[in-house]
Length: 148
Image (cartoon, rainbow, N blue to C red; front, top):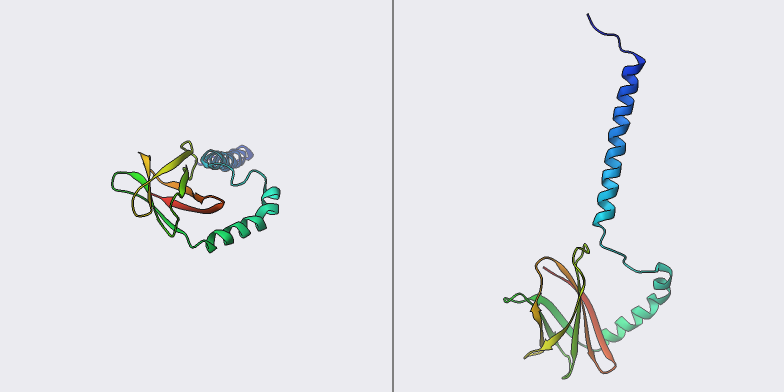
């Protein structure tokens, strides 16, 4: 003997099915919000108004003829190898974790031989985005590179 399929059975199936969908949506939304590392720009309108100025500054920096490579050296310190930079150049590194799980760091790198700059502290484990500023007087060169 089989039981009859009633309206209560259909109600249970619909409520259960939609309950699963709603639960998965809330879980995915929670994961998305909690894993976002932060704001790319504080105000997109203001950023759009400054964009042409940023392009002009980048073009001026490219005309300097400076270049830089960023890496983690064998001792675990941040190392920057530069070419074309004049004597007395300062190197400042702003480091941030791509997912915002670690506090941002700001280091002034120590000048070493052959146009190299090295951090005094070791770079914490993990992947980092390094925003490097090389400055000498009024001249500035900026790059942003990932370091693993």
